[in-house]
Amino acid sequence: MTPILRMERLTRRFGGLVAVQDVDCAVAPQEIVAIIGPNGAGKTTLFNLITGFLPPTSGEIYYREQRITDLPASRIASLGVIRTFQNLVIFNEITVAENVMIGCHRWTRTGLVHAALGLPSAVREDRRVSETAREALAVVGLDKREHDLARDLPFGQQRLLELARALVARPAILLLDEPTAGLSAGEARDLVTLIRRLRADGGTFVVIEHNMDVVMEAADRVVVLDYGEKIAEGPPQAIQRDPRVIAAYLGDEAAEVSVGAADGAHRGGATDGARPGGAARRETQAP
Amino acid sequence: MTRERVALGLLALVIVALPFAVSTAYAFNVLNIIGLYAIVTLGLILLGCSGQISLGQAAFYGLGAYASALLSRDLGWTPWITIPLAIVAVGGVAYVVGLPTLRLAEHFFVLATVGFGIIVNVLMVQLLPVTGGGNGLRDIPPLQIAGVRLVTDRQFYYPIWALTFGTLILARNITSHRTGRALRAILSSEVGAAALGIDVPRYKMEVFVLSAAYAALAGALYAHYIRFISPSPFSLLASLFFLIMAAVGGLTNIWGGLFGAALVTVLDQVIRAEVPRVFPRVGGEYQTAIYGVLLVLIMIFFPRGIVRGALDLRRALSGRSPATQAPRADAEPAEEGRA
Image (cartoon, rainbow over all chains, first blue to last red; front, side, top):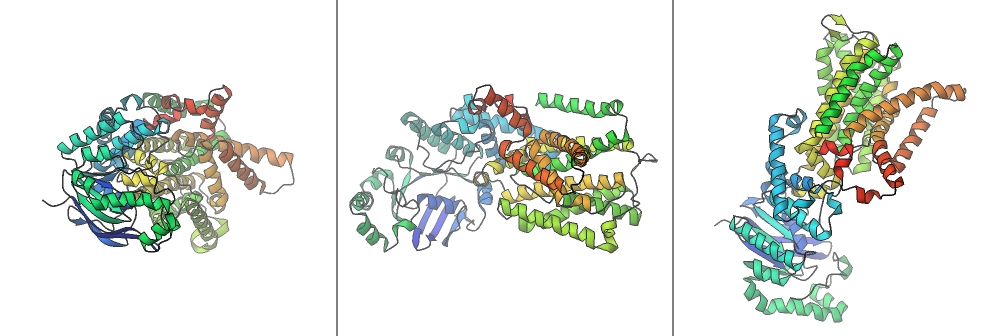
């Protein structure tokens, strides 16, 4: 089966620092792939490369075997590669319902002229969009708050809002960047159930996740990144026992004790400050 | 939605009824100018919906006026043809101007529009054979409806306000469907918009061209209404003037555009009449100073426009914090366009 998403020797450098290095990876339709790795391992950078928010230094990205390496972000999203953000990108000043309605942009068609004239097609489409939004809000349990301004939601609910907004875009593949951060244990479990249900309906997911319970429960396959490189890949149970993975996490804890020496050796001399979020990157809990 | 329909109905009634309440040519003149400025301001507000500000709107306004005036006067075409032609031509100019400038970050885009406005104004003064230079263009043909030449202020009232009303409806519709949602997304976060497949540069271009088209329509109407044009009403000062109207209205609020145009035009009339009376020896520059200060004050104290600002202020005075009030979006009239 042709992969829905494929990366070929994908590399991104920031000055002397290699954030993502020679990553090869393919995602099959209806697969749930988890990407794990210590903070600063290049997971979010990988998402930024796939979705066109950062140009790769070298390497290629294919969506259904169509090369999307140099396409603008909006073009990649309109093909069906939809993402959420680790730090949340919410349209703060508008209502929860309208946030989700904007998610329908990809498959709606009303243009400037139709809208300006208020043609029946525009009105019909609006009705469909607002119904879709309401359904999606019900799915994530935010239907009671549809009239509130998005900025007034607590963090966890904003994350669910972002998820609902991504879902109504009808993504061919959905990239979730730490979707359970800020959620309660119950909400996280609900999220896993939802993802598995959507996969059964034909959805494909790539999930950056720190919560290993979620990873073990949801993922078909786990990709482990460390210092930008893919160090392991396989089913969750195997990954949990993989000595390289254990070393990457435990090695990091050792590195915390003697930061300077270990870091310098490990990365071949790249300076710590050049690494995005360098200072905070070892705070992640080991699995 | 329905409440906005009522507001539109009321506005239509007021527009139809006003001529029965006023009689002087001066009053009609002020009303007509308000209508024209409201069209320009609505364009600026559409642009504002995408998070952009233009200080070159008077150039588009002037280009529309010169284009329609020249086409109708020198080629003998009816203004009913030359006005749409002028709008399309100015839209094309805006597209060409937008190609390089819309890539610029916000404040650099504003600077680029200032530069464009100055260039156009200089051309109006210097291209003597075409524009007549500082002496301007005379004998611009008037509009004709059913064989009647529209030459008085009163005759022009309905055509102008019909178009003002029409452009208001268009702007309202644009901001209340898919395009409007895309614009609000862009205004809030360009990254978030792009992540959902919204082509940010395309939408910015669309509203920029549209705002120029609005200005061109008003300019062309102005030319056939006043029937004499010269470069001075299309200077940077006029652009500032339009921006103040939009800022008074609240930059992203369609209804505010109408309000801003009316308030600032009336204020301008008062200033013109009163300042020379109080300070007999001041030159014309005082206007610039007054508008500059006004713009700064609005931006500091009422960044969301005077109407919204007043609402916020009332809430603050009544002891409830705006933050706890904000969620009730339907309590704010300006939110209606988003329904």
